Image 1 (cartoon, rainbow, N blue to C red):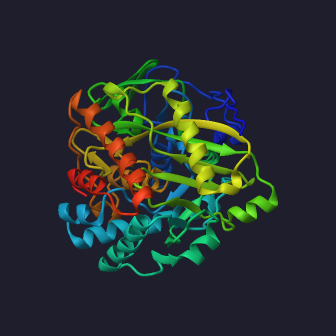
Image 2: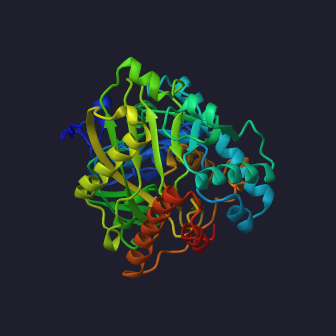
Image 3: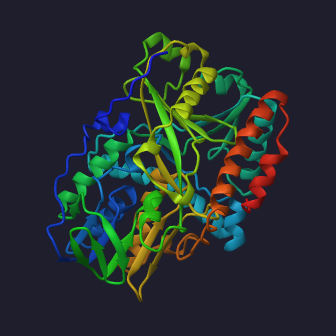
Length: 461
């Protein structure tokens, strides 16, 4: 099993999209605009897209420390899913049952909305709306699959939103080993994430949005962003920095940056692809606690990722954390264990990046009309679609548009701050260890783990 990492690119996706870090424009000095957005990923680009659509006369600037698509938007698993990290119960507890249902329906609609924009703007990003399959490979996972479907029915969602699939149907879609059953939802598309972020950047540039790269934001304050290259003054200041938020002054406890790593095979021969399945480019995972995720790429690779990398003390974010040979080896082994037919295949890429986790696992969008400060994020790794909804919500809030999305329960809320160190380091890494232990225990016994359930309860899920 040979491995290689192409050092000129941050990920397979960046390489495939030809994004080598070349910077197109830097901030020339002090400027005045109507809206300044800090962060050149999905959230910032979608916000700029919908702001410019609603009011083409707006002067909008996006500031990016590295290059557009450098962060999670260019490195993720390529799932454009309707998954919202906070549970129905948690959302309803803060708002109402009706609001929780509205939040999930908005997520369903968001997947279609992104597909609409991809078609409208002719963004070449390998978009395939093939759904998402999560297989159950032991009795504990099978019990969770049944419970998940029952929960969705209790909340009023239909089989067309999430259905239980038996072992034969799950295996037809995903040629993994030991498949007992699983769940399927059509509300997910596979996408080449870096091509999507590149296409969005080209689209907003064509609308005269100013994208300044290699421009580090040092401090955000009402009416101004102070950067390494000058001050940007604006009525609205938007923070869209997700897992990089702790690097900003005064924000080191707002978000925990957790690392999620990925590997990718070489393009597989036709006969092997037929054994693996995923003929409709369904995204896939299983029902373990420590999340894994994968897709079949347009050129016939399997791109596969998962959690398991440690949280780094003090919410540190460093380039060397993107690669962890132990975790990458674990991911290769896990993929081959899932698909034994992949034994001996070549793995060509290994990469990683951070994602943002709020203390209550509940994403949020807010805009303070008095100060002009806005923010969106805390997607817990489910940001490909969620960032689009955030961008639309930010645009509606900033421009005071008459839109139902402003009433969604994530709007205007604030997550509590994370504990100071060393409590943060102990708690986050203990959670990762608990999930890992629970998965190993369930694989051996087939019985659900009480340890994982206890940890979820501590988070209020």
